Image 1: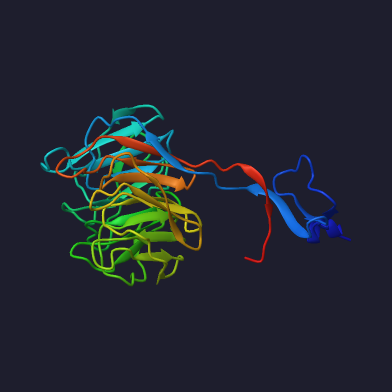
Image 2: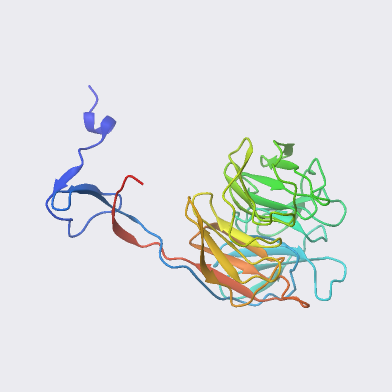
Length: 324
């Protein structure tokens, strides 16, 4: 006969006071307060800090992926808006180093910001072929199977190995495609026709945030099968960035050179912090709300090679469980 505890778990402890040294995930009922409590991860206060300066300019959404200690960015528009470049760089937490160039010179790209320096996909773009797609394995860039539709001024989410979702095109349309690690497949369309949206999340749970068409505060959520209109951000604008998941996310930057940051807690968007420099058309990456990057972009009449790093502590703390 099976052990009951391995099937149903253990009874919740009933204690007259909170334990002095709880373990992560421990749950108990406090008879003194009449409440259910647990020892879980909590969100601290997030903030931006200066990061290393890139060697090349990567404005107008060069593709990016990684974290504050290991990131990669490729392509984008160099200073004074000459033809798009194919420069690529890796970040080690302190400085940027030029690495092998991308195969395709373009800008206004979508990318898998939740990826890593050895698992990144960059796709679409404002320069032919606008169906272009290429992956980065930590050393070289490789052209992959083309997308089915042109995706200029695109957004995206996911990783190159576990899957991705790509959306957006110019002129604006609702086209959306999924990547399974080998090829692209057309999916259910978005509800709102717009471009230059920020993406966050995974191939089966993603956000498409803000955009170039009114209402610019729009947000849509992908569940792996279809898109649904979500809760709008407070300040809209195309060319912004985002990082995290559909459960916990931040959105930042965007036209007209915004420096504000908003945080999604699963219910609503709240203003939480400011970038040191307002900017738009940024590179961005981060798989979780704990850390990520805002890279390059435009700062009005000029462009920037500055990097800002986002960090949010997630300490363990005793929390009281409520009905909400």
